[in-house]
Structure formats: structure tokens, C-alpha cells
Length: 496
Length: 106
Image (cartoon, rainbow over all chains, first blue to last red; front, side, top):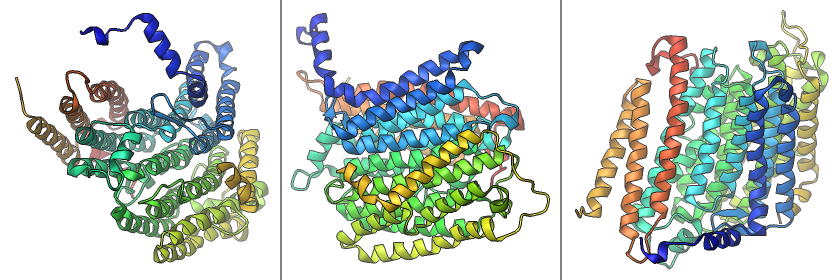
């Protein structure tokens, strides 16, 4: 090795100090809090005395992460660690959504596994926290390698979590299906990265953005092929047509708290990176993306209309929401998504979606654990008489998902269509609005079942296993849905 | 030895294609897992080729080899999770054929 490559220990130490300056620490702090939570969580499994500490520990890790993200939201530090990690308002806002998704999934898991005769596992909580850490890393990544590590940090725990009820064939099958398709798309992503690296010699998004800018030298077919592979793998994570087929099966087979995390967190994380890396796609891809988005919307809505199972209906509704969000991405192509408002619109939409869908999954998980083992839609009939508060909250979440004014979902849709109109894609926006009207049909169907239909014979009032956990989730979700619905300016102000 | 870059990339593409075909056509879970490993290794080969394309004596391009190291690490973790899932399936069904699992239908 030549002398130039040899470094004295002092030189390494000083390099380390310049790399990890104060701003780098504040960008890394949320991840550090979650990682510490993962390690400590596994340690609590060593003895029975420590096991009681696990609940407060998970909560403390999530709360610390949220606190650091709020600090970052108020005092953004920009790009740190040799241009590999973002510490800006966008990544902090996404990070807060992931903490909320993780918290809702964790609260919903209380008492959920009791019926299987399975004690609450330390692995469950550790995997959950590391999935949240993976999402946080994905949304903050400014480098293909960092994003890939985040993606795997999210995916590997989710594969294990979705097969957690391993005595149930449906759960194991969901896990295996999710794993095989997820690993396949990871391989697509990696080969795409390799092609881009071969074409440009770089994996940093900042360098690639300069190379891809109009006016500079064209990146060549190799890089375009790489971008297409990366886009395909992201569309898989977003459940977009034609990569949506696995979604209903995996969502239905997985334990409901895990489904909640998959539906809310994974989608948000993949959208965060798609926005950051949208410059890799040429502006001419906008029509293709919008077309895919519209097909996704149609499949999601039509699929949800015919479902008799509430969990599957929520899965299809999630596909439809991904379609709406992809419309916003299509509208933002060819420009800076932060500048043209697409990032703001998508963060807002996701904030409303995380709390509406997360709340609906929380109610579903509590009903399942409380004795209504089946997730069939007909079991929701007459819930108003049996559990009025849960029924009212569920109705609010359905209205928000359907985009009724007064709930957060309405403004999310409004901002997304605003982006489209500004991008001269009014036709697509109108098609999207029509699709949203179609979606109302199945959300109203749930509300009618809740309030207007009699309880079917043989269904007894559920006894909630952990009413405090459910109550906390409902307060959080109802509060957030109403806050985003009635005072949308507050959240927008925070996003800058 | 001086193999042209284009040949190396072509080899990587062929390996990747074979992995893809294996994933799409074979129904045994173990073979499907092996196909995914093949795709990951094709990506590694492409990363190392890229590093050779962009390195000079004065300034080596290290992103590629480092990416490949991370891929090896993560592929091992992925194989561990994947095999655990296959074993869980085998315990329930006494087979590793993927078509046997059809509890859930689209």
C-alpha cells in the first residue's frame, strides 16, 4: 500500500471528528435512539425481572426518537456525513410519521397474540423498532447504499413479523410470499444501482442529480435501464400496478398489528425516497406513471368494492391510496418536488392516511383479540350498539379515508390534485377525483354496517383485552385526523 | 489478465437473467432462494466491474466494492430469514413446494 493510503491513528480520529460534527449527531440521533431501543429490548429478554421493563423501554425509544425528530424539524441541519444522510424538515416529518405508525402497531399488538397462547415476545418489539429505524433511514437517505441498508433494515424484520404466528398456515404463507417477492425486488434494486454505478461511477444522489440535470451530458442507456429497475422495485414497495397482486394476501395473512405497520410505514418510506430520487426518471415518464397510478386506483377501488373481508378491503383501499399518491409524483416529475409542492402534498396526505388507516387497524386488532376472531365485514354490523366509541372512531376513519371534508383525508386529496392542476395535468386530476367518488361507496358500506344494520345472530359484545392501549391509539388517531382536517394550515406551516 | 469491461457486464447480465428465470419458473422454495442469491451475486459482479471502470491508479473508486461488501452481509441475513420461513412452511405442510401453500387466494 502506498504512503498516501496509510493514515495515522490521530489522523483517523480527527477525520472522525470532522465527519461526526454536531449537525451530523442531530441527524443521526433519531436512529441512535431506535437502535438503542432494539438492543436494550433484546437484553430485557434475559430475565423475568427485566421483562417488565420492556413496555416502558419501547415507549421511551419511540418517544426519544420523536423528540429528536421534532428538534430536527425545527432546526434542520441539511445533508451530513459526506452527503449521505438528510437532516431536513422533510426527513423529520416522515420520521415522525414512522414513529406514529410504529407506536400504533405496538399498541395494537398488546393483547393481540394472547389468544394464540403466545406470550408477548421481546423479538416482536425489537423487530418492530428496527423496522421503524429502517423506515427512518430510507426517508433520510441521500445515497443508494444508505437507502438499501434502510430498505433491508425495514424488510427483514417485516418478513419475520408477518410470519410471527407460525402455527398458522396463513401467517407463514404470508411471510414467505412477502419474503420471496421482497427479496426479488431487492435484487432488482441492487442490479439497478450497479448499472447506475457502472454508467456514472457514483452512488450519491447529489452527484447523480448533477449528472442527470438537463443540459449536462446524457447519462446513457445503461443508467436509464438502472433507473427503470430501481423505479420498478420502488413501485413494488408502493403496491402499484402491476406489483399489487401480493398485497391482499400478505395483508390478510399477517397479524393485524404488523399489517398496520406495513400499510402505513412501508408505503410512506418508499414514497419518501421516490420523491428524493425522482430526478432519475426522465420528465417523459410522467404520463406512464400517471397511467400506472390510475390503473392502480381503479384496481384498488374495484377490488375493495367486492370484498366481504374488512382486512382485505383495507388492503385494497391501501392500493387505491398508493395510486392517488403516485399521481402526485407523476405531476412532480421534471421539477424539484420540494419546490413544486409535491413533497408537502404527499407528506400531508400520508399524515392523514397513517392515522386513519392506523386507527382502523387498531380497532380491527382489538375486535379480533376481544373475541371476534373473524375479520369479515358482516361482523361489524351493529357494532354501534355493542361498542359505541369504537364504532364512532371507525366511522371517522372511514370518512377520512374516503376524503369527506372535515377529516384529514380531504385536504390530502385536495393538495394532491392541486399539484396535478399546477402541472397542467387537469385531465388526470379529474379522473382521480372520479375514482375517489367511487371509493366512497365502500367506505359508506362500512358505516352503514356499523350503524344501520342489526347485530348478526351469535355475535356477542367483544371484551377488549387491553382497553387502555386501544384508548390511547384512538385518542391519538382521532385527534390527528380532526386536527389535519380542521386546521390543515398548522401542519403545512411546520413543513415550511 | 485483462478481461474487457463489456464482457464482465455481459456475464453479470446473463447471471442476473438466469436468476430472474429461476425465480419466475421454479416452484421449489429452496431453488427460488438460490435464484435470488444468483441475482444478488450478479449485482456484486456488476459493482466490481463498475469499480474497475472508474478507478485510476491515483484515485480508486471504492463505492462499488463497499456496496458489494454490504450486499454480501445482507444476503446472508436474508438467507437466514428465508430458510427459517421455508422450515416453518415445511413443518406445517411437509413440503417445500410453493404451490402447496394456498390458504390465501387473491
